[in-house]
Image (tube, rainbow over all chains, first blue to last red; front, side, top):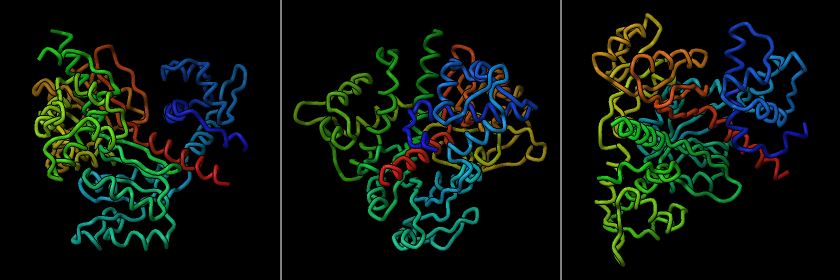
Length: 215
Length: 215
């Protein structure tokens, strides 16, 4: 599929999971087809944008009928990477890290955390949700043995950059950064920032603004 | 503080937690002052942008000395809402929801989840991390008793919109949406989307693109 080699614009990539969520919802309601107009109405996006977004992943609808639902779901799941299993390491088995290890949803969406690492000696040899926790010193060896390329970063913010440097040095190629620190990495290394506490700050401020409007 | 009534641009709001994280790191290393140039270099933002961002929250540095670190941290923590406690409800005590209930980090950043709700009868009356889980039917009454205005949405995607509608109807004013569904709400209701599985898809795709570049 040569079109998979086209770089998809990030806004499109961010909308695809919305379409998938809506398509799965429609399937539950017994639908078999969806038109781009239906999707557009529910998601709040222009119908032409929906069709354009789908064209990036070679999905085309049929006149009058629309998109075949099963085909759409399979294509989106596959393209988004949710139907493959991607092995990953997690760094920092503190509060947020443990929570992510406990979340089976990640595996359903294609992320299979196979080991966690922590600097705390007392955690070494323990398990969370059947996932073993190793000492950070064992990371290099385990990376060499397994070839894992994806890492979830949930360490304390003070050591975020330092741990990220170590990861990259040892062969990690994509970092999912949950710390509020904007870590920097060499070209070619993928960073995905999900600073949930920063999102919280945005929400608190928007709520305060709304309160002030009413006064 | 009249300047708090200015609507802060979202990019600024998203950078403030980075400055805070860096300031806390500098404090650990024994620093007492930071210049906008130092901050800019570490974060990867222009120094003029840093100064401009701080001006929104009335923080000004001194020539040659820079920003006083304690003052900076207090101002940022306060402005971002992390030093206040905001009571919240959580909807959907499934895998991701339970994980968030377990994460004490949220409380440190100002979000105090006081109750969770779920449609599953068997969960009613149980606790996760000392937080009680109630049946969803008890939500209206508990909202009236407590006046809680913030809700965390971690229900299955098929019911996301329906539960969001119920929340808004019963007095919720800000929704932190973890589902991959772009829920729609009336004007004046704050929505913060944190679709972690959508972030995962972006990361998988970027990683694949990097792999293809090398071929």
